[in-house]
Length: 188
Image 1 (cartoon, rainbow, N blue to C red):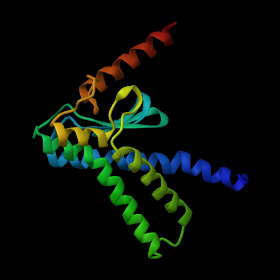
Image 2: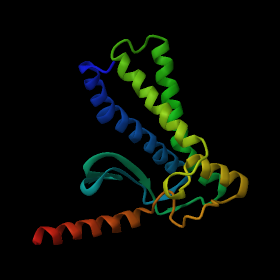
Image 3: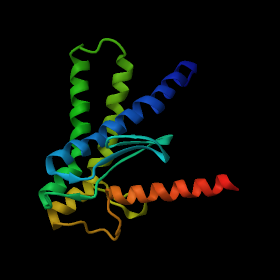
Image 4: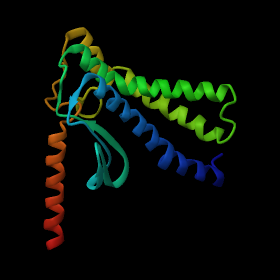
């Protein structure tokens, strides 16, 4: 039965664990981008207009689960680089979940056990929907589908012309358009 104590757990899960899981997942792209070499990397957290930007981290005004990694181009353009880049959030999520689960199993985390167990749950939840090849809303492929198509066909084969990982320059342009709309609305 869902009780009052579960409300607190739900809030912690929705506003701390789930966004943390997503942030760590997206940081897998960043680590891989350092290895394969990307131009203009950016890790965006949240949505809406920019609240602030520190280095490559762009924090948006509206707190949501929506976060993404963007870049303009790969320095090492090739099938292996793309497969590694798209596999990086899967590998990051899997390694974190297995490490934390092993620490829990060996009694290393003896405080906040429920927090860490939920973290592992959400990490594996995201891993499942990221690794198994499938199409998402609008026919966009997930990372697993892109990896599968890159290995099997050497390229993406879906009908979408938009890149799976957006170009940082395009994200910056969208940000300016959003800010311009906000300015026009505030003048009215």
